[in-house]
Image (cartoon, rainbow, N blue to C red; front, side, top):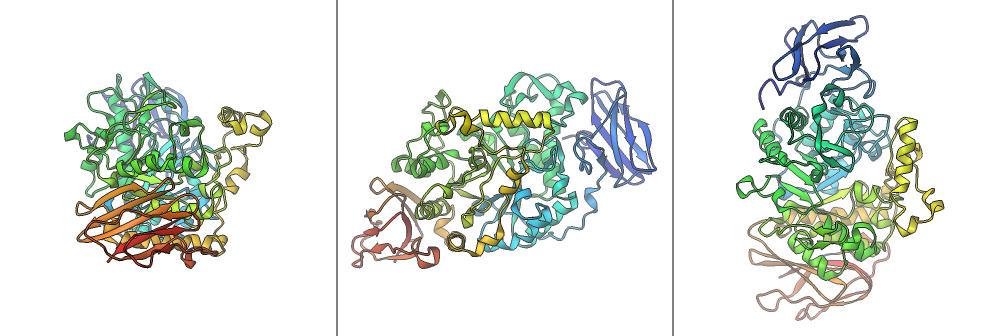
Amino acid sequence: MSPARAALGASCEPGGVRFRVWAPERRVVELCVETAGREATHPLQKDADGFFGGVVAGLGPGELYRFRLDGEGPLPDPASRFQPRGVHGPSEVVDPAAFAWTDTGWRGVPLEELVLYELHVGTFTPSGTFAGVAEKLPHLVDLGVTALELMPLADFPGARNWGYDGVSLFAPARCYGRPDDLRRLVDEAHRLGLGVLLDVVHNHFGPDGAYWGLYSPHYFSKLHETPWGAAMNLDGPSSGPVRDFFVENATRWLREYRLDGLRLDATHALVDDSPRHFLAELQARVRAALPRDVLLIAEDHRNLASLVRPEAEAGWGLDAVWADDFHHEMRRNLAGDHEGYYCDFSGTLADLATTVRDGWFFKGQHSEHFGGPRGTDPAGLEARRFVFFLQNHDQVGNRALGERLHHQVDPAAFRAASTLLLCAPQTPLLFMGQEWAAPEPFLFFTDHAPGLGRLVTEGRRREFRGFSAFSDPVRRERIPDPQAASSFERSRLDWARIDQEPHASTLRLHRALLRLRGQEPLLRDSPRRSVRVATAGDDALVVEYTGDGRTLLLVARLRGAGAVEPAPPAGGVRRPRPLLSTEDPAFTTDARPVALDPAGHATRLSFARPGAVLLEWE
Protein backbone atom coordinates (compact mmCIF):
# COMPACT_ATOMS: atom_id res chain seq x y z
CA MET A 1 0.00 0.00 0.00
CA SER A 2 1.54 3.30 -1.03
CA PRO A 3 1.93 6.00 1.67
CA ALA A 4 -0.44 8.32 -0.21
CA ARG A 5 -3.18 5.71 -0.43
CA ALA A 6 -2.78 4.88 3.26
CA ALA A 7 -3.74 8.36 4.41
CA LEU A 8 -7.47 8.46 3.69
CA GLY A 9 -9.58 10.68 5.91
CA ALA A 10 -8.11 13.03 8.51
CA SER A 11 -4.57 12.43 9.84
CA CYS A 12 -3.10 14.52 12.64
CA GLU A 13 0.33 16.00 11.93
CA PRO A 14 2.48 18.50 13.83
CA GLY A 15 0.76 21.86 13.45
CA GLY A 16 -2.34 20.68 11.64
CA VAL A 17 -4.42 17.95 10.05
CA ARG A 18 -3.97 16.33 6.65
CA PHE A 19 -7.15 15.45 4.73
CA ARG A 20 -7.41 13.07 1.80
CA VAL A 21 -10.43 11.74 -0.10
CA TRP A 22 -10.97 9.97 -3.43
CA ALA A 23 -13.40 11.74 -5.78
CA PRO A 24 -12.03 11.20 -9.30
CA GLU A 25 -15.05 12.55 -11.22
CA ARG A 26 -15.31 15.75 -9.15
CA ARG A 27 -13.75 19.07 -10.13
CA VAL A 28 -13.80 20.84 -6.75
CA VAL A 29 -13.71 19.35 -3.26
CA GLU A 30 -13.76 21.64 -0.24
CA LEU A 31 -13.19 20.90 3.42
CA CYS A 32 -15.87 22.42 5.62
CA VAL A 33 -14.76 22.84 9.24
CA GLU A 34 -17.91 22.82 11.40
CA THR A 35 -16.51 23.13 14.91
CA ALA A 36 -18.56 25.78 16.73
CA GLY A 37 -16.80 29.14 16.54
CA ARG A 38 -14.21 27.86 14.04
CA GLU A 39 -16.33 27.41 10.94
CA ALA A 40 -14.31 27.74 7.74
CA THR A 41 -14.00 26.36 4.22
CA HIS A 42 -10.71 25.20 2.68
CA PRO A 43 -10.17 24.05 -0.93
CA LEU A 44 -8.34 20.73 -1.42
CA GLN A 45 -5.94 19.97 -4.27
CA LYS A 46 -6.58 17.19 -6.79
CA ASP A 47 -3.80 14.84 -7.89
CA ALA A 48 -3.49 12.74 -11.04
CA ASP A 49 -5.16 9.72 -9.42
CA GLY A 50 -8.32 11.58 -8.45
CA PHE A 51 -7.45 12.12 -4.77
CA PHE A 52 -8.12 15.50 -3.18
CA GLY A 53 -5.97 16.49 -0.21
CA GLY A 54 -4.13 19.09 1.77
CA VAL A 55 -2.94 20.10 5.23
CA VAL A 56 -4.94 22.65 7.20
CA ALA A 57 -2.80 24.35 9.85
CA GLY A 58 -4.16 24.98 13.32
CA LEU A 59 -6.59 22.06 13.37
CA GLY A 60 -6.35 19.10 15.73
CA PRO A 61 -8.27 16.28 17.42
CA GLY A 62 -11.91 17.02 18.11
CA GLU A 63 -12.50 19.19 15.06
CA LEU A 64 -15.77 18.55 13.22
CA TYR A 65 -15.69 18.57 9.43
CA ARG A 66 -17.35 17.45 6.22
CA PHE A 67 -16.61 17.72 2.48
CA ARG A 68 -18.45 19.65 -0.21
CA LEU A 69 -18.27 18.13 -3.73
CA ASP A 70 -18.71 20.58 -6.60
CA GLY A 71 -20.95 22.58 -4.27
CA GLU A 72 -22.95 19.50 -3.22
CA GLY A 73 -23.14 18.61 0.44
CA PRO A 74 -21.58 18.91 2.91
CA LEU A 75 -21.08 15.14 3.26
CA PRO A 76 -19.34 13.06 5.95
CA ASP A 77 -15.88 11.64 5.30
CA PRO A 78 -15.99 8.09 3.82
CA ALA A 79 -12.96 7.28 6.01
CA SER A 80 -14.16 9.08 9.14
CA ARG A 81 -12.81 7.74 12.42
CA PHE A 82 -15.89 8.88 14.37
CA GLN A 83 -19.39 10.20 13.70
CA PRO A 84 -20.49 11.79 17.01
CA ARG A 85 -23.86 12.96 15.63
CA GLY A 86 -24.66 9.94 13.49
CA VAL A 87 -23.80 8.78 10.00
CA HIS A 88 -25.34 11.83 8.31
CA GLY A 89 -23.59 14.36 10.55
CA PRO A 90 -20.10 15.83 10.61
CA SER A 91 -17.03 13.65 11.03
CA GLU A 92 -14.62 14.17 13.92
CA VAL A 93 -10.83 14.33 13.75
CA VAL A 94 -9.40 11.59 15.98
CA ASP A 95 -5.74 10.98 16.76
CA PRO A 96 -5.37 7.19 17.19
CA ALA A 97 -1.79 7.62 18.44
CA ALA A 98 -2.88 9.54 21.54
CA PHE A 99 -4.18 6.50 23.44
CA ALA A 100 -1.88 5.16 26.19
CA TRP A 101 -1.78 1.39 25.62
CA THR A 102 -0.63 -0.95 28.39
CA ASP A 103 -0.58 -4.24 26.43
CA THR A 104 3.01 -4.13 25.18
CA GLY A 105 3.58 -7.74 26.25
CA TRP A 106 0.55 -9.12 24.41
CA ARG A 107 1.40 -11.59 21.64
CA GLY A 108 -2.04 -12.64 20.43
CA VAL A 109 -3.90 -15.96 20.33
CA PRO A 110 -2.55 -18.67 18.02
CA LEU A 111 -5.11 -20.44 15.89
CA GLU A 112 -4.56 -23.77 17.64
CA GLU A 113 -5.65 -22.18 20.95
CA LEU A 114 -8.59 -20.22 19.57
CA VAL A 115 -12.01 -20.56 21.22
CA LEU A 116 -14.29 -17.79 19.95
CA TYR A 117 -17.12 -16.02 21.76
CA GLU A 118 -19.31 -13.98 19.41
CA LEU A 119 -21.22 -11.06 20.90
CA HIS A 120 -23.27 -8.04 19.93
CA VAL A 121 -22.12 -5.03 21.94
CA GLY A 122 -25.57 -3.44 22.15
CA THR A 123 -27.34 -6.46 23.64
CA PHE A 124 -24.56 -8.18 25.58
CA THR A 125 -24.97 -6.03 28.71
CA PRO A 126 -27.58 -3.67 30.18
CA SER A 127 -25.58 -0.60 29.12
CA GLY A 128 -24.98 -1.86 25.57
CA THR A 129 -21.55 -0.20 25.45
CA PHE A 130 -17.87 -1.03 25.09
CA ALA A 131 -17.49 -0.28 28.80
CA GLY A 132 -20.27 -2.75 29.57
CA VAL A 133 -18.47 -5.48 27.64
CA ALA A 134 -15.25 -4.68 29.52
CA GLU A 135 -17.04 -5.23 32.83
CA LYS A 136 -17.97 -8.77 31.75
CA LEU A 137 -14.51 -9.82 30.59
CA PRO A 138 -13.79 -11.70 33.86
CA HIS A 139 -16.82 -13.90 33.09
CA LEU A 140 -15.30 -14.80 29.71
CA VAL A 141 -11.93 -15.53 31.30
CA ASP A 142 -13.59 -17.84 33.83
CA LEU A 143 -15.59 -19.46 31.04
CA GLY A 144 -12.40 -20.41 29.24
CA VAL A 145 -12.82 -18.84 25.81
CA THR A 146 -9.68 -17.26 24.39
CA ALA A 147 -11.05 -14.49 22.15
CA LEU A 148 -14.07 -12.26 21.71
CA GLU A 149 -15.54 -11.86 18.25
CA LEU A 150 -17.42 -8.57 18.07
CA MET A 151 -20.24 -8.22 15.58
CA PRO A 152 -19.66 -5.29 13.19
CA LEU A 153 -18.98 -1.92 14.82
CA ALA A 154 -18.95 0.35 11.75
CA ASP A 155 -21.44 3.12 12.48
CA PHE A 156 -24.97 2.68 11.16
CA PRO A 157 -28.15 4.76 10.91
CA GLY A 158 -30.26 4.95 14.04
CA ALA A 159 -29.55 3.75 17.56
CA ARG A 160 -29.73 -0.05 17.14
CA ASN A 161 -28.61 -2.44 14.43
CA TRP A 162 -26.84 -5.77 14.00
CA GLY A 163 -24.03 -3.83 12.30
CA TYR A 164 -24.34 -5.21 8.78
CA ASP A 165 -26.00 -1.96 7.68
CA GLY A 166 -22.80 -0.06 8.46
CA VAL A 167 -21.92 2.95 6.33
CA SER A 168 -19.10 4.64 8.28
CA LEU A 169 -16.72 1.72 7.84
CA PHE A 170 -13.80 3.20 9.83
CA ALA A 171 -15.85 4.63 12.72
CA PRO A 172 -17.01 2.66 15.80
CA ALA A 173 -20.75 3.13 16.30
CA ARG A 174 -21.26 6.14 18.57
CA CYS A 175 -24.04 4.40 20.51
CA TYR A 176 -21.44 1.98 21.92
CA GLY A 177 -18.95 4.67 22.96
CA ARG A 178 -16.06 6.67 21.58
CA PRO A 179 -13.04 5.20 19.74
CA ASP A 180 -10.94 5.27 22.91
CA ASP A 181 -13.65 3.30 24.72
CA LEU A 182 -13.12 0.50 22.19
CA ARG A 183 -9.36 0.77 22.74
CA ARG A 184 -9.88 0.47 26.50
CA LEU A 185 -11.94 -2.68 25.92
CA VAL A 186 -9.20 -4.24 23.78
CA ASP A 187 -6.47 -3.15 26.19
CA GLU A 188 -8.32 -4.68 29.15
CA ALA A 189 -9.05 -7.89 27.22
CA HIS A 190 -5.36 -8.25 26.46
CA ARG A 191 -4.46 -7.62 30.10
CA LEU A 192 -6.74 -10.51 31.05
CA GLY A 193 -5.36 -12.79 28.33
CA LEU A 194 -8.22 -12.51 25.84
CA GLY A 195 -7.91 -11.74 22.15
CA VAL A 196 -10.41 -9.55 20.31
CA LEU A 197 -11.55 -10.11 16.72
CA LEU A 198 -13.93 -7.92 14.73
CA ASP A 199 -16.48 -8.76 12.06
CA VAL A 200 -16.04 -6.44 9.06
CA VAL A 201 -18.34 -6.03 6.06
CA HIS A 202 -16.67 -5.32 2.72
CA ASN A 203 -19.24 -6.91 0.42
CA HIS A 204 -21.91 -4.17 0.50
CA PHE A 205 -22.79 -0.81 2.03
CA GLY A 206 -25.82 -0.19 4.22
CA PRO A 207 -28.97 1.26 2.66
CA ASP A 208 -28.96 4.61 4.49
CA GLY A 209 -26.01 6.99 4.75
CA ALA A 210 -23.79 5.35 2.11
CA TYR A 211 -22.42 8.40 0.34
CA TRP A 212 -19.74 6.58 -1.66
CA GLY A 213 -21.61 6.91 -4.94
CA LEU A 214 -21.50 10.70 -4.61
CA TYR A 215 -17.74 10.62 -4.13
CA SER A 216 -17.11 8.13 -6.94
CA PRO A 217 -19.31 5.89 -9.09
CA HIS A 218 -16.38 3.48 -9.35
CA TYR A 219 -17.00 1.96 -5.93
CA PHE A 220 -19.78 -0.12 -7.48
CA SER A 221 -19.40 -2.91 -10.01
CA LYS A 222 -21.09 -2.68 -13.39
CA LEU A 223 -20.58 -6.43 -13.88
CA HIS A 224 -21.61 -8.17 -10.68
CA GLU A 225 -24.58 -8.20 -8.31
CA THR A 226 -25.02 -9.40 -4.72
CA PRO A 227 -28.20 -10.10 -2.70
CA TRP A 228 -27.84 -6.54 -1.38
CA GLY A 229 -27.48 -4.80 -4.76
CA ALA A 230 -24.45 -3.93 -6.88
CA ALA A 231 -21.26 -5.67 -5.85
CA MET A 232 -18.17 -3.75 -4.89
CA ASN A 233 -15.96 -2.96 -7.87
CA LEU A 234 -13.00 -5.25 -7.24
CA ASP A 235 -12.13 -6.14 -10.82
CA GLY A 236 -13.45 -3.45 -13.17
CA PRO A 237 -12.07 -0.11 -14.38
CA SER A 238 -10.78 2.07 -11.51
CA SER A 239 -11.01 -0.86 -9.10
CA GLY A 240 -7.49 -0.26 -7.74
CA PRO A 241 -8.49 2.53 -5.32
CA VAL A 242 -11.54 0.51 -4.26
CA ARG A 243 -9.37 -2.47 -3.35
CA ASP A 244 -6.98 -0.07 -1.57
CA PHE A 245 -9.90 1.40 0.37
CA PHE A 246 -10.94 -1.94 1.82
CA VAL A 247 -7.37 -3.02 2.52
CA GLU A 248 -6.82 0.21 4.41
CA ASN A 249 -10.07 -0.31 6.28
CA ALA A 250 -8.97 -3.75 7.46
CA THR A 251 -5.48 -2.55 8.31
CA ARG A 252 -6.65 0.44 10.31
CA TRP A 253 -9.04 -1.56 12.46
CA LEU A 254 -6.20 -3.95 13.26
CA ARG A 255 -3.52 -1.32 13.77
CA GLU A 256 -5.41 1.50 15.48
CA TYR A 257 -7.38 -0.75 17.84
CA ARG A 258 -4.76 -3.52 18.20
CA LEU A 259 -7.31 -6.13 17.27
CA ASP A 260 -6.15 -9.71 16.95
CA GLY A 261 -8.01 -10.53 13.79
CA LEU A 262 -11.00 -10.04 11.55
CA ARG A 263 -13.97 -12.13 10.54
CA LEU A 264 -14.64 -11.22 6.90
CA ASP A 265 -18.39 -11.22 6.32
CA ALA A 266 -19.92 -13.06 3.34
CA THR A 267 -16.75 -13.45 1.32
CA HIS A 268 -18.77 -15.31 -1.31
CA ALA A 269 -20.20 -11.88 -2.21
CA LEU A 270 -16.73 -10.41 -2.86
CA VAL A 271 -16.98 -11.11 -6.58
CA ASP A 272 -13.61 -10.78 -8.27
CA ASP A 273 -12.53 -12.21 -11.62
CA SER A 274 -9.10 -10.56 -11.63
CA PRO A 275 -5.92 -12.69 -11.77
CA ARG A 276 -5.26 -12.27 -8.04
CA HIS A 277 -8.40 -12.51 -5.95
CA PHE A 278 -9.01 -9.60 -3.63
CA LEU A 279 -8.92 -11.86 -0.57
CA ALA A 280 -5.43 -13.06 -1.43
CA GLU A 281 -4.29 -9.47 -1.87
CA LEU A 282 -6.05 -8.34 1.32
CA GLN A 283 -4.46 -10.93 3.58
CA ALA A 284 -0.98 -10.43 2.12
CA ARG A 285 -1.06 -6.64 2.37
CA VAL A 286 -2.59 -6.64 5.84
CA ARG A 287 0.05 -9.02 7.16
CA ALA A 288 2.83 -6.99 5.54
CA ALA A 289 1.54 -3.77 7.11
CA LEU A 290 1.42 -5.10 10.69
CA PRO A 291 4.32 -5.98 13.00
CA ARG A 292 2.47 -8.95 14.55
CA ASP A 293 0.45 -11.97 13.55
CA VAL A 294 -3.29 -11.57 13.09
CA LEU A 295 -6.08 -14.02 12.29
CA LEU A 296 -8.23 -13.60 9.19
CA ILE A 297 -11.36 -15.76 9.11
CA ALA A 298 -13.86 -15.99 6.26
CA GLU A 299 -17.60 -16.47 6.41
CA ASP A 300 -18.35 -18.35 3.20
CA HIS A 301 -21.00 -20.98 2.42
CA ARG A 302 -19.19 -22.35 -0.64
CA ASN A 303 -16.92 -24.77 1.27
CA LEU A 304 -13.88 -23.64 -0.70
CA ALA A 305 -10.61 -25.14 0.47
CA SER A 306 -8.82 -22.42 -1.52
CA LEU A 307 -9.92 -19.86 1.08
CA VAL A 308 -7.43 -21.26 3.61
CA ARG A 309 -4.79 -22.84 1.39
CA PRO A 310 -1.65 -20.69 0.98
CA GLU A 311 -1.16 -18.70 -2.20
CA ALA A 312 1.74 -20.99 -3.10
CA GLU A 313 -0.86 -23.77 -3.38
CA ALA A 314 -3.31 -21.68 -5.47
CA GLY A 315 -5.18 -20.56 -2.34
CA TRP A 316 -6.05 -17.19 -0.86
CA GLY A 317 -4.16 -17.56 2.41
CA LEU A 318 -6.80 -16.94 5.08
CA ASP A 319 -6.46 -18.66 8.45
CA ALA A 320 -9.87 -20.28 8.90
CA VAL A 321 -13.44 -20.36 7.61
CA TRP A 322 -16.87 -20.65 9.25
CA ALA A 323 -18.03 -24.19 8.42
CA ASP A 324 -21.83 -24.22 8.37
CA ASP A 325 -22.32 -27.92 7.67
CA PHE A 326 -21.74 -28.96 11.28
CA HIS A 327 -24.45 -26.59 12.47
CA HIS A 328 -26.88 -27.69 9.78
CA GLU A 329 -26.37 -31.41 10.44
CA MET A 330 -26.81 -30.87 14.18
CA ARG A 331 -30.00 -28.86 13.81
CA ARG A 332 -31.44 -31.39 11.39
CA ASN A 333 -30.61 -34.19 13.84
CA LEU A 334 -31.70 -32.49 17.05
CA ALA A 335 -34.51 -30.12 16.04
CA GLY A 336 -35.70 -31.63 12.77
CA ASP A 337 -35.15 -28.52 10.60
CA HIS A 338 -35.69 -29.53 6.96
CA GLU A 339 -36.72 -26.43 5.01
CA GLY A 340 -34.50 -23.88 3.28
CA TYR A 341 -30.86 -24.93 3.18
CA TYR A 342 -31.57 -27.69 5.70
CA CYS A 343 -33.14 -29.69 2.86
CA ASP A 344 -29.60 -30.64 1.82
CA PHE A 345 -28.81 -32.32 5.13
CA SER A 346 -29.90 -35.69 6.49
CA GLY A 347 -28.88 -35.19 10.11
CA THR A 348 -27.81 -38.82 10.30
CA LEU A 349 -24.93 -39.75 12.57
CA ALA A 350 -23.04 -41.07 9.56
CA ASP A 351 -23.20 -37.68 7.81
CA LEU A 352 -22.38 -35.90 11.04
CA ALA A 353 -19.34 -38.14 11.51
CA THR A 354 -18.19 -37.29 7.98
CA THR A 355 -18.58 -33.59 8.76
CA VAL A 356 -16.55 -33.77 11.97
CA ARG A 357 -13.93 -35.95 10.28
CA ASP A 358 -13.48 -33.73 7.20
CA GLY A 359 -14.50 -30.25 8.37
CA TRP A 360 -17.54 -30.02 6.13
CA PHE A 361 -19.95 -32.45 4.48
CA PHE A 362 -20.35 -30.98 0.99
CA LYS A 363 -17.22 -31.58 -1.06
CA GLY A 364 -18.66 -31.17 -4.55
CA GLN A 365 -21.96 -33.06 -4.26
CA HIS A 366 -25.14 -31.65 -5.75
CA SER A 367 -26.93 -29.19 -3.49
CA GLU A 368 -30.69 -29.03 -3.92
CA HIS A 369 -30.80 -25.66 -2.17
CA PHE A 370 -28.12 -24.06 -4.35
CA GLY A 371 -29.13 -25.92 -7.50
CA GLY A 372 -25.71 -27.28 -8.35
CA PRO A 373 -22.50 -28.73 -6.96
CA ARG A 374 -21.31 -27.27 -3.66
CA GLY A 375 -17.95 -27.53 -1.97
CA THR A 376 -14.41 -28.75 -2.62
CA ASP A 377 -12.15 -31.39 -1.13
CA PRO A 378 -10.64 -30.20 2.18
CA ALA A 379 -8.06 -33.00 2.29
CA GLY A 380 -4.89 -31.96 4.10
CA LEU A 381 -6.41 -28.98 5.91
CA GLU A 382 -5.86 -28.89 9.65
CA ALA A 383 -9.00 -29.20 11.79
CA ARG A 384 -8.34 -25.83 13.40
CA ARG A 385 -9.08 -24.09 10.09
CA PHE A 386 -12.79 -24.94 10.37
CA VAL A 387 -14.89 -22.86 12.79
CA PHE A 388 -17.73 -24.96 14.24
CA PHE A 389 -20.77 -23.65 16.11
CA LEU A 390 -24.20 -24.60 17.37
CA GLN A 391 -25.33 -20.97 17.48
CA ASN A 392 -24.23 -17.69 15.95
CA HIS A 393 -25.92 -14.40 15.15
CA ASP A 394 -27.07 -15.61 11.70
CA GLN A 395 -28.30 -19.04 12.69
CA VAL A 396 -30.29 -17.63 15.61
CA GLY A 397 -31.24 -14.14 14.46
CA ASN A 398 -32.25 -15.17 10.96
CA ARG A 399 -34.88 -17.48 12.36
CA ALA A 400 -38.28 -15.80 12.33
CA LEU A 401 -38.61 -15.83 16.12
CA GLY A 402 -34.92 -15.71 17.01
CA GLU A 403 -34.98 -19.08 18.79
CA ARG A 404 -31.73 -20.54 20.06
CA LEU A 405 -31.05 -24.26 19.72
CA HIS A 406 -31.51 -24.85 23.45
CA HIS A 407 -35.00 -23.33 23.22
CA GLN A 408 -36.07 -26.16 20.91
CA VAL A 409 -34.31 -29.31 22.06
CA ASP A 410 -34.18 -31.38 25.23
CA PRO A 411 -31.63 -30.02 27.76
CA ALA A 412 -29.86 -33.39 27.89
CA ALA A 413 -29.42 -33.36 24.11
CA PHE A 414 -28.16 -29.78 24.26
CA ARG A 415 -25.55 -30.79 26.84
CA ALA A 416 -24.43 -33.65 24.60
CA ALA A 417 -24.25 -31.37 21.56
CA SER A 418 -22.29 -28.77 23.53
CA THR A 419 -19.79 -31.40 24.62
CA LEU A 420 -19.29 -32.51 21.03
CA LEU A 421 -18.80 -28.90 19.92
CA LEU A 422 -16.22 -28.08 22.59
CA CYS A 423 -14.32 -31.37 22.30
CA ALA A 424 -14.37 -31.65 18.50
CA PRO A 425 -10.99 -31.08 16.84
CA GLN A 426 -12.19 -27.95 15.03
CA THR A 427 -12.13 -24.35 16.33
CA PRO A 428 -15.29 -23.82 18.41
CA LEU A 429 -17.42 -20.68 18.57
CA LEU A 430 -20.01 -19.83 21.21
CA PHE A 431 -22.67 -17.17 20.78
CA MET A 432 -23.32 -14.86 23.71
CA GLY A 433 -25.43 -16.47 26.41
CA GLN A 434 -25.13 -19.94 24.90
CA GLU A 435 -22.89 -21.01 27.77
CA TRP A 436 -25.72 -20.65 30.27
CA ALA A 437 -28.62 -21.52 27.92
CA ALA A 438 -29.89 -17.95 28.02
CA PRO A 439 -33.69 -17.77 27.66
CA GLU A 440 -33.60 -14.58 25.59
CA PRO A 441 -34.00 -14.86 21.81
CA PHE A 442 -31.74 -12.97 19.45
CA LEU A 443 -34.00 -11.15 17.03
CA PHE A 444 -33.31 -9.13 13.92
CA PHE A 445 -33.51 -5.41 14.76
CA THR A 446 -33.01 -2.08 13.01
CA ASP A 447 -33.73 1.60 13.58
CA HIS A 448 -34.17 3.03 10.10
CA ALA A 449 -36.20 6.09 9.14
CA PRO A 450 -39.94 5.30 8.83
CA GLY A 451 -40.04 4.86 5.05
CA LEU A 452 -37.07 2.51 4.83
CA GLY A 453 -38.04 0.86 8.10
CA ARG A 454 -41.45 -0.09 6.74
CA LEU A 455 -39.79 -1.77 3.76
CA VAL A 456 -37.45 -3.67 6.08
CA THR A 457 -40.36 -4.92 8.17
CA GLU A 458 -42.31 -6.02 5.11
CA GLY A 459 -39.26 -7.66 3.56
CA ARG A 460 -38.42 -9.49 6.75
CA ARG A 461 -41.85 -11.07 6.95
CA ARG A 462 -41.91 -11.82 3.23
CA GLU A 463 -38.68 -13.84 3.58
CA PHE A 464 -40.52 -16.50 5.57
CA ARG A 465 -43.55 -17.03 3.36
CA GLY A 466 -41.93 -20.14 1.86
CA PHE A 467 -41.70 -21.84 5.27
CA SER A 468 -44.65 -23.98 6.28
CA ALA A 469 -44.86 -22.44 9.76
CA PHE A 470 -45.42 -19.00 8.20
CA SER A 471 -47.33 -19.77 5.02
CA ASP A 472 -50.39 -18.21 6.70
CA PRO A 473 -50.24 -14.39 6.32
CA VAL A 474 -51.75 -14.00 9.79
CA ARG A 475 -48.87 -15.95 11.33
CA ARG A 476 -46.32 -13.92 9.34
CA GLU A 477 -47.71 -10.76 10.89
CA ARG A 478 -46.69 -12.16 14.29
CA ILE A 479 -43.03 -12.24 13.32
CA PRO A 480 -41.41 -9.58 15.52
CA ASP A 481 -41.03 -6.22 13.81
CA PRO A 482 -37.31 -5.42 13.34
CA GLN A 483 -38.11 -1.71 13.73
CA ALA A 484 -39.77 -2.13 17.11
CA ALA A 485 -37.56 -1.18 20.05
CA SER A 486 -38.95 -4.25 21.81
CA SER A 487 -37.14 -6.54 19.32
CA PHE A 488 -33.87 -5.01 20.45
CA GLU A 489 -34.72 -5.07 24.15
CA ARG A 490 -35.92 -8.67 24.08
CA SER A 491 -32.54 -9.67 22.65
CA ARG A 492 -30.57 -8.20 25.55
CA LEU A 493 -29.07 -10.78 27.91
CA ASP A 494 -30.41 -10.83 31.46
CA TRP A 495 -27.33 -11.49 33.59
CA ALA A 496 -29.45 -11.94 36.73
CA ARG A 497 -30.37 -15.41 35.47
CA ILE A 498 -26.83 -16.74 35.35
CA ASP A 499 -26.90 -18.05 38.94
CA GLN A 500 -30.35 -19.60 38.60
CA GLU A 501 -31.06 -23.15 37.42
CA PRO A 502 -30.90 -24.60 34.88
CA HIS A 503 -28.55 -21.87 33.71
CA ALA A 504 -25.96 -22.23 36.48
CA SER A 505 -25.39 -25.95 35.84
CA THR A 506 -25.19 -25.37 32.07
CA LEU A 507 -22.53 -22.74 32.70
CA ARG A 508 -20.58 -25.14 34.93
CA LEU A 509 -20.59 -27.69 32.10
CA HIS A 510 -19.21 -25.20 29.60
CA ARG A 511 -16.53 -24.08 32.04
CA ALA A 512 -15.50 -27.67 32.73
CA LEU A 513 -15.36 -28.52 29.02
CA LEU A 514 -13.27 -25.48 28.17
CA ARG A 515 -10.97 -26.13 31.10
CA LEU A 516 -10.39 -29.63 29.74
CA ARG A 517 -9.85 -28.29 26.23
CA GLY A 518 -7.28 -25.81 27.52
CA GLN A 519 -5.39 -28.30 29.69
CA GLU A 520 -5.67 -31.60 27.82
CA PRO A 521 -3.11 -31.82 24.98
CA LEU A 522 -5.13 -34.42 23.08
CA LEU A 523 -8.06 -32.00 22.74
CA ARG A 524 -5.89 -29.43 20.96
CA ASP A 525 -4.95 -29.55 17.29
CA SER A 526 -1.44 -30.91 17.01
CA PRO A 527 0.53 -32.94 14.44
CA ARG A 528 1.35 -35.38 17.26
CA ARG A 529 -2.31 -36.27 17.67
CA SER A 530 -4.51 -38.51 15.54
CA VAL A 531 -8.30 -38.32 15.54
CA ARG A 532 -10.76 -41.01 14.50
CA VAL A 533 -14.47 -40.29 14.13
CA ALA A 534 -17.04 -43.06 13.90
CA THR A 535 -20.65 -43.86 14.66
CA ALA A 536 -21.89 -46.30 17.28
CA GLY A 537 -25.35 -47.23 16.15
CA ASP A 538 -27.80 -44.65 14.84
CA ASP A 539 -27.73 -42.28 17.79
CA ALA A 540 -24.13 -41.92 19.04
CA LEU A 541 -20.94 -40.41 17.69
CA VAL A 542 -17.51 -41.51 18.90
CA VAL A 543 -14.39 -39.36 18.60
CA GLU A 544 -11.10 -41.03 19.54
CA TYR A 545 -7.97 -38.96 20.21
CA THR A 546 -4.61 -40.73 20.34
CA GLY A 547 -1.12 -39.39 20.94
CA ASP A 548 1.96 -39.82 23.13
CA GLY A 549 0.78 -43.26 24.18
CA ARG A 550 -2.56 -42.04 25.49
CA THR A 551 -6.13 -42.32 24.26
CA LEU A 552 -9.21 -40.20 24.95
CA LEU A 553 -12.64 -41.24 23.79
CA LEU A 554 -15.65 -38.93 23.47
CA VAL A 555 -18.96 -40.73 23.25
CA ALA A 556 -21.87 -38.42 22.43
CA ARG A 557 -25.36 -39.90 22.33
CA LEU A 558 -27.59 -37.27 20.73
CA ARG A 559 -30.92 -39.10 20.90
CA GLY A 560 -32.83 -41.36 23.22
CA ALA A 561 -31.73 -43.95 25.74
CA GLY A 562 -29.67 -47.06 25.13
CA ALA A 563 -26.30 -48.72 25.30
CA VAL A 564 -23.27 -47.64 23.29
CA GLU A 565 -20.35 -49.98 22.72
CA PRO A 566 -17.57 -48.11 20.93
CA ALA A 567 -14.67 -50.10 19.54
CA PRO A 568 -11.85 -50.33 22.11
CA PRO A 569 -8.67 -48.40 21.39
CA ALA A 570 -5.65 -50.14 19.94
CA GLY A 571 -3.00 -51.50 22.27
CA GLY A 572 -4.82 -54.22 24.17
CA VAL A 573 -7.34 -54.25 26.97
CA ARG A 574 -7.17 -51.32 29.32
CA ARG A 575 -9.54 -49.84 31.86
CA PRO A 576 -11.34 -46.59 30.91
CA ARG A 577 -11.44 -43.75 33.41
CA PRO A 578 -14.29 -41.19 33.10
CA LEU A 579 -13.05 -37.59 32.87
CA LEU A 580 -16.44 -35.92 32.44
CA SER A 581 -20.06 -36.85 31.93
CA THR A 582 -22.92 -34.51 31.10
CA GLU A 583 -24.87 -36.41 33.76
CA ASP A 584 -22.47 -35.42 36.54
CA PRO A 585 -24.56 -33.76 39.30
CA ALA A 586 -22.72 -30.46 38.81
CA PHE A 587 -24.08 -30.16 35.27
CA THR A 588 -27.76 -31.01 35.73
CA THR A 589 -30.36 -30.75 38.45
CA ASP A 590 -31.79 -34.22 37.73
CA ALA A 591 -28.73 -36.38 37.09
CA ARG A 592 -29.26 -39.77 35.47
CA PRO A 593 -25.72 -41.18 35.52
CA VAL A 594 -24.28 -43.03 32.55
CA ALA A 595 -23.41 -46.57 33.59
CA LEU A 596 -19.96 -47.82 32.60
CA ASP A 597 -19.29 -51.57 32.40
CA PRO A 598 -17.53 -52.19 35.74
CA ALA A 599 -15.40 -55.02 34.37
CA GLY A 600 -13.64 -52.63 32.01
CA HIS A 601 -12.94 -55.40 29.49
CA ALA A 602 -15.60 -54.12 27.07
CA THR A 603 -16.44 -50.46 26.82
CA ARG A 604 -20.18 -50.42 27.32
CA LEU A 605 -21.97 -47.23 28.26
CA SER A 606 -25.64 -47.25 29.18
CA PHE A 607 -27.42 -43.93 28.68
CA ALA A 608 -30.80 -43.22 30.27
CA ARG A 609 -31.20 -40.27 27.87
CA PRO A 610 -29.01 -38.21 25.51
CA GLY A 611 -25.63 -37.36 26.96
CA ALA A 612 -21.89 -37.39 26.45
CA VAL A 613 -18.97 -38.96 28.27
CA LEU A 614 -15.26 -38.29 27.91
CA LEU A 615 -13.06 -41.26 28.84
CA GLU A 616 -9.34 -41.76 29.23
CA TRP A 617 -7.71 -45.18 28.89
CA GLU A 618 -5.19 -45.88 31.62
